[in-house]
Length: 255
Image 1: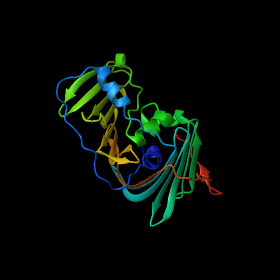
Image 2: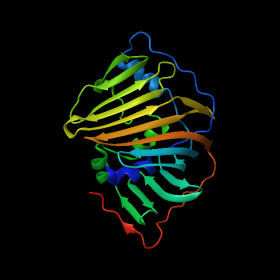
Image 3: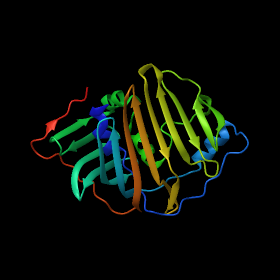
Image 4: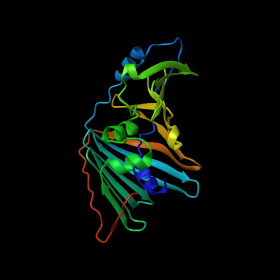
């Protein structure tokens, strides 16, 4: 888990400009799976680029750090994330549909590979679409009605996977716009779980972005927690995606 901690910190930074929270509603009568999925799909997130600034805190069983972050998204193509402290870049990640790269200046290390090893370490299958969905407040899975059951859970509507092996997933949505409130992924046989909580959404150029999120990953008695406060977001600006590993860095082999 510690080997992927830096990657998770770089990967999961997203931010939005301080803005009014979009009103939410509580679940009422039970709805069928198809109705909930249609409501989710009505939330279109249509943009070409997003430039985002955030504050982030990372904590595990033996360490903690606070930093700033800059994230640039070219939708469906690439994501560039920079982690900074006092304006100094500590780490960068470049994520594309077929490749994941990142480097950290602490220890002069870098990683360059596909999603296979990272999926195994994270305890859940990863790909570019899932990473992008995580940042945008969308479900990680493709929502097919036959794969889920629908229940009312507290004030939210919840979709739960019918199958629980090798992985069980659950998604909670508020009732006003069917914005995602919580993602839960559980792999019982490996004693692994990931929970993502979204604390509301704001409207930017008619595009709903999460206002904040918290990620908690557990494996046996170990944990990693990332809390992100969204600061600013700019939509459809001309942006660059500079990424180059400094010379002399040692390649990380994740096992």
